Amino acid sequence: MRTTTGWHVEGAASPLRRGRVERRDLRPDDIAVRIDYCGVCHTDLHARRGHAGTTPLVPGHEFTGVVTEVGPDVTAFAVGDPVAVGNIVDSCGECAMCRAGQENFCRAFPTLTYGGTDRHDGSTTLGGYSREYVVREAFAYPLPPGLDPAAAAPLLCAGVTVWEPLRALGVGPDTRVAVAGLGGLGHLAVKLAVALGATTSVISRSPDKEADARRLGARGVVVSSDPARLEAARDSFDVVIDTIAAPHDRGPYLRLVAMDGTLCSLGDLGPVTVETMDLLVGRKKLSSAGSGGRPATAEMLRFCAQAGVAADVEVLPSARVNEAFDRLARGDVRYRFVLDLSDLD
Ligand SMILES: [Zn+2]
Ligand SMILES: [Zn+2]
Image (cartoon, rainbow, N blue to C red):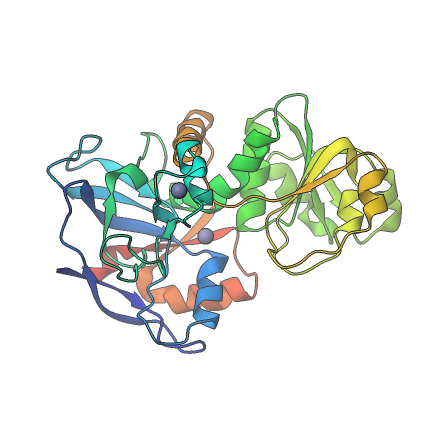
């Protein structure tokens, strides 16, 4: 075992506490990563809320850093390489999903970056709110030059979660896209859809998102609290990306989808009730997605470097992680907190 320092969840309502984090010794195909930046994801808040205290919990599953050590069988990385790691760190490698490059849907369930179970020694994985991580090289990605390492960190969870459906739905210059919810996921969905060439709009309850939407590259806002504007936008988007995190009626959003178009629901993963008529009229589809496979993650990073897309971030020293949690819970962030972990040295 080797040790590093990180931020532990102590209980559902307690502040995170700085402490020792154990990492495994490198296996032949492992790399050690010095973590420089780790994004703060909604999942991290949920994990704290659900923490029973039976196993240690260190959140964090979208991070960037530098390779500090490589196992003897590692071929893709050398010491000193900039690297990025997302929310899955292993999978069975044999099922149909893994063979198709969709390790995120592994039938044997992928190993999560934190709160997961290591496939070799059965230990609980501890996440990226720490100064070092040890990971199989297959689940680490070269961070392309030109991407700011702090602004790139959120691409590894929020980014790829919106990238896979945008690509799977064929979003490009002929596509009309609308994004509901302008948070961590939503602002990246807007930027990526715009960079793919789509005509992109934002759906928001309040008209005061207009300036932000335009700054992100959208052409405007559909104000969902205004029935007249909703009616005017009926059947007008090929793809609606719904990133709203709370339970909500999908009906109004389905009615904005054009014929044969798709509502992709990414933010709220609870049960959904829909009127079949909202699907029937216009042959509309309801879908979802989450995280990304290895090929799509690597493709997204290359695309973002080329297109100059990264998250809008507020970088905080990791010692202010509790402030980040409190403000994220209130929705007070534009649009992603990223922890700078250099204060753990
Ligand atoms: Zn996440
Ligand atoms: Zn698998």
